Image (cartoon, rainbow, N blue to C red):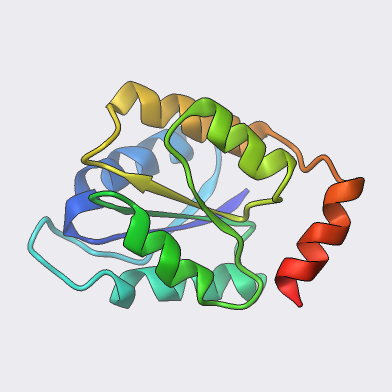
Length: 142
């Protein structure tokens, strides 16, 4: 899978670790920044991830921040992006099954590394359920 990833300073540490996990799993990962834990404005790094996913250049995107809230909001401003802020394995599973989430937002300050790994695994492997959800996705995207 081709995956775009980006973070602000508060998500930088987990972003670097996630890139290693994804690469080890055989995914092609492109990092949109930031490149250090120095304070930055997250939209500079999140919007390009969302745009790249929306344009079809990447299969999925992952964005990170302290809470993940602002990152999800910024990503969801891009038409065609369905970014889900996930805080548990169940939220990740439902984001994929019901919402066909193509971008995942994570909060480094709110999740342990073990939780991130579990969420990431479920989000990457859970297929979209289709069915009644297709109609709802079409409404979101219209």
